[in-house]
Image (cartoon, rainbow, N blue to C red; front, side, top):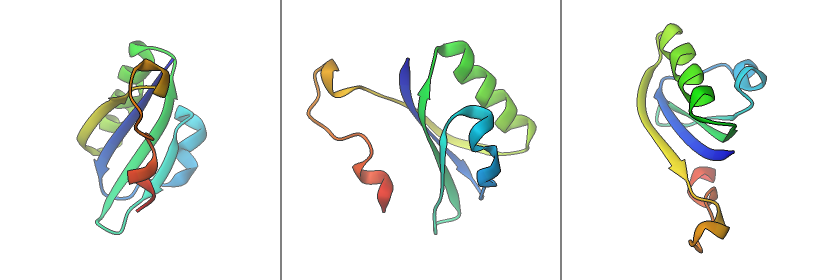
Length: 81
């Protein structure tokens, strides 16, 4: 499993959260952040295809390393703003 952060233009309905198993944060800047664990690249691709099918403009996709992978960063700190 890998942690991912996906940013899309516009605000997605939080009701989509269970569909992908990702947490959805609507931001004041008019974007939405989705983050959480996906089991593999196929799950990531499926999520991205569904977002595209909804007409969402995908702004970024980032794999967030787990702390045990050699980073001392807290991966979600920047997302709370």
